[in-house]
Image (cartoon, rainbow, N blue to C red; front, top):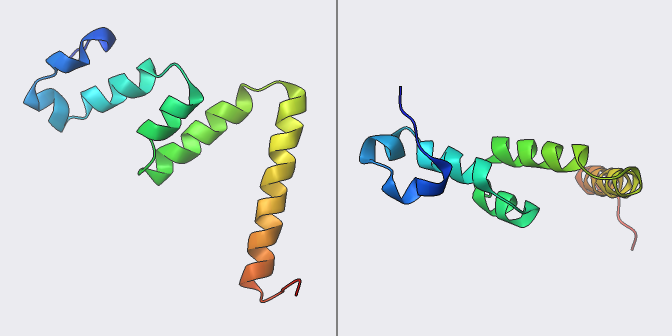
Length: 87
């Protein structure tokens, strides 16, 4: 069993890095949403996980705003895909 201390990711071995233990340690060690988003930036699956984590941790008013923004983006995407245009 491999163990990596979250505060000692700089000591990760090559084997730890091959198994992505350093990546997961950084993910769990993130202290801001911006830091978390930067870590998962190029991984679509983890981007979705980060979005879900964020939306489940916001206060109800913020959650309503986030849901409205997501609906608006979805509607805009659908309109674009179906050839609708405002102009």
